[in-house]
Image (cartoon, rainbow, N blue to C red):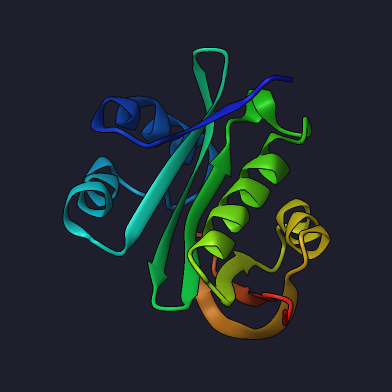
Length: 150
């Protein structure tokens, strides 16, 4: 499936908020996305599109030589098509070009599909955060990707 990657814009938020809503038990609000877009100089956001339709998004912080993936979702209509993997690899490539050496993220311990994607992309589990998520209450697995030494 053809997919394009673009910087997220305010006009994308209606669809992005819908995707978050069907993807998470405690999704980001429109205000949270707006704050990241407009007020946080360390925050970057992309949307990925299948045709004209937003298939998913990824938000991360990049600070010095580290990055933290904050929110990442694929609309249910576009899951299991490789779009999430392509988006993650695209963002990881952008980060490498900015000399990012490490990328961190948290994921629900029960989210086996996401964990498989991160492990396939070179992330390693480095720990857990007890009770990190609520609704339902669950631990987060902490993953880290480290750039290969040159």
